[in-house]
Length: 287
Length: 306
Image (cartoon, rainbow over all chains, first blue to last red):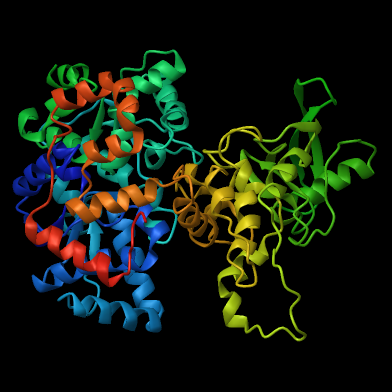
């Protein structure tokens, strides 16, 4: 299996551990990731607001780069995934817009023809590797580890949504043998997209979920988006101050939890890079 | 369920001015295709005096919005289940039982000038093609039920910083209308529109399927971002960051957005980020990537902060 790998900004910046862990898990499973090294940003939600055409062009270029490799596209960020899928949908549906965007891209040397199949790593694992093969690879079942999952809103809402994504993260987590604790409610949001603008409001949103995780006594939170991870890990201390409550719940990328169950050493999964220490979790896993 | 089968309706009741509520449980005989509003109507016809709003019973008036089993819904369009918990909408003050006070909210969205503002009197018939107002089509479907704002995680009450999606749909209807001549950028940058968390919960809940984030909030954020004071310019700062680095460089974006004092106030968090290798002083993409991204900005006509 070989994929054009688009890590996005965060996996190459503030959450490099998701890049490290994804590569480790992929390598362990014999999946070849060919990184699109100069792909740039997908535009997140912000560029869509100030210049929707630029947003389409940024994403169409990423897809064109994957096409140059003649490979399907693999992502590790729910927001990048949603932006790419949403762009493909717009350019498929609106022929006038497509002609305009394709022509403007052509003038910059980008040849957009058709969207490559674009999937998040979690979906690739379930669809291409398969539950059975993944389960056979588990050497360290995480039974007794209580996990609260948090998939990004953009996986199942908005223009890039895929209704099949509801429960996807939980299905991947089941492979590890961990106990899934249903903490997330539909009204939850991690608040990431306003962290820079109004962190008080953002951490109050994240704090609702974090507080329930604490109430439920979970051992860790797992995310499929490095953006949600940032809100829960880097800003957990700010949420604690806002809530006036100690939370101290480790936050892992799902690739890291899966990697632990596959027997990959914690150091190869970047577990030391989290702001909230994961020692309580790794000790429990090692016991 | 079969005709005549007893179903349970639990209703949250609250006397005016008390601030405390109680749950009352009722048995209701089920009838074919019965909706939640039918059960409430049956109870009051039998002598109960539960307070709630409803009018059209056909998903048009938006009056009957309540929480059904924890989710804000139009009760005229919600199938009655064997057990249903009916509560007033979240994020609004309760007047009595299931009736919430919409007035303070409506006053807030009136401050966003939800009307077309122009200085000249148009000729008749006004030369307006339907394609000219495509951007407002979906927004005109809004029935003002308040469900989107009730379920919004960024909304924290009528005095909170975010105005809520309902108000923004009303504002966008007119801000996106080509007949409108009002420069709304100052008003919008002070409106709190930039505090939308982009979770799309409003899209999911909207009973008339308006893509609220795409059709209302994102266009308004775009207008607000180019406002005269720069108060809501984060999307532009983000775009500039991408133009310069190809990828997000969080250190410089944080500095640009928060300023020196903001950085000083967040030194603890920044120190933790550096300790764990989560941020770097310099993080630009390769020259190849930056050149390619700059070319896209130019081709898209993005003029940035001007």
